[in-house]
Length: 415
Ligand code: SF4
Image (cartoon, rainbow, N blue to C red; front, side):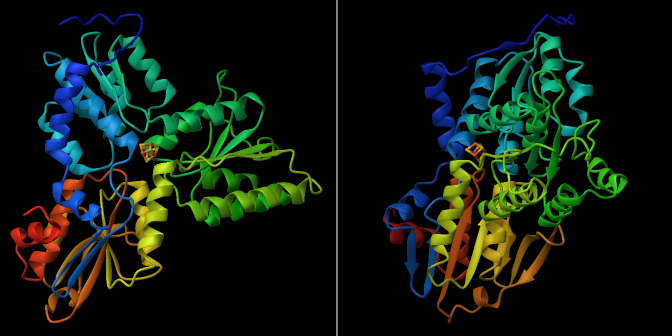
């Protein structure tokens, strides 16, 4: 194997018709569900006896995730004789990442990207996940001469375009997102602009926003500001709140909660106007929540208009858009964030991720336990959750109510 780095990475197109035909069959076998499609076709409701399951109008894989998975599978097939690496996770779902690992795709953990990429050669293939990757890392991959299969979602690239534009016009990007999230790290790197002189600040909570708004209006303790944001790697190197908050442009991670993002935009605009005697010329905003995230949040709001006893949100615990679905559900009814159907341990226990404790725990659900009670359970899932996991959950719910899988299939019209 060659060890000499080549001059530049080679972006490769692996989506040839022959490859995609095979890949799509494989992807369907791994992640599709005839049962889920059948329930969807019946109005997204399945009732057997006194047990009813309602699916959200929109849930599960989005176009960006489908494309990323297709490309990753295609890369493995096209480069069957090469080492194929993946920067972190292709998407935030353990089942999908497990499948790729079983296919021989080697994940490079997020904290080891620079160290491990530095060892790659021009005979290696690197898959860039749907979230994208930081510019410095892309340059490093390029310097190693690796072949690159870039699955970055187009909606993420739209955000990059926006923050690059802010930098070009001398505006600091205020990014609503999680500073450590792969997508936000990639976006932050683009906010430095093409010349690297731009700046950014990442805010996550409304408390962050209020702190920032106070500083915009009347200044304050510069060191306290830097302690709050630079310790969490949430601002650009050299960021100075006394210099870099004069002109701000707001963008967001594509998967944030729409209502919260709108509130953040509103508060920031008001702060700038208060400081600038009513003028908003030093404020720009562009809503960068992607259509798929929006559709899943809207689909859940629609589902919540029906009477439900319980809501199950299925997905990876580190999935941003899934987390926000849980937040929406929790405001209205008992909501459990489960990774797989196995989290429904038995009739009395649900293993789930508690967003507030940031840990998995086990809670009791008496409603599932008593088969004499009529119950209605809602199910939704984020953009990174495959339908086979929804099917498992559906089947498991009915099994816990004493209804076997074949009866579920018959009731859905596929038995
Ligand atoms: S959630 Fe949105 S940004 Fe992320 S992959 Fe899907 S469509 Fe793209």
